[in-house]
Image (spheres, helix red, strand yellow):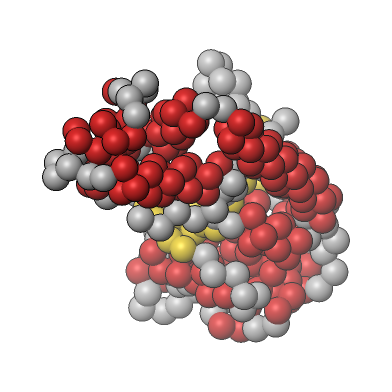
Length: 318
Ligand SMILES: [Zn+2]
């Protein structure tokens, strides 16, 4: 099971207490996953399709409890190659119009009589805003395992809906961005703290703890690695000076690229690297324009300082 499906599984089990939130969740689920199809003249097919059975069971229970609707659950077998079965909850046709009315999704004069966005009333309270984002994530969301990179997203079918999701997140001080991918508008967050905050906002506290554990381990090991690199740079000092300089030059090249250095330092680096045995005064004569011994020394020290900063993970200003 992926981290994302663990999160979805946990979200499907969060309590559903209030009618206001049920309305918001069902609305988000239908709009984000395009679950409403127009069948001509006030007839609509309303379905909830999800990759986890627990998700459709949640909406089944909500429809029954808050709207008295008994839906039908069926499995849609995917292609045999991936065996990605999906699950679908079908609202009986006779109940579809009434449900859309109750969710305030009908609007006279709108395309197919349907609103493209929820009413403000739907997300009036902060509990409902959370519920909206929860369903949007459950139906159209993804989150990377923190071992890999930091990324959480909700991919929705329209730009307006993406902006609406961004606005709900903004109410909780989460500043999401929007990008596009394969005709979807992707609302995403990239910073570890924000992902953690979003998981707890959604109500996935177990997933949030798991996320934090991995994140802390990762940060500690990064810090230890940086420390080790710093210690290694102390070993440098006991080496013969020319060897240490060449080692620094190669390190800068691999981490930053020598071409990023200012010209004066770059020339110095190439000349030293190509003449490991040469005394400083002679290195100076190879420079253009030629340089005295103390000038050579100064530049090599600047190169050493840059390598040291890179090893210790400090910012390098060139
Ligand atoms: Zn609510």
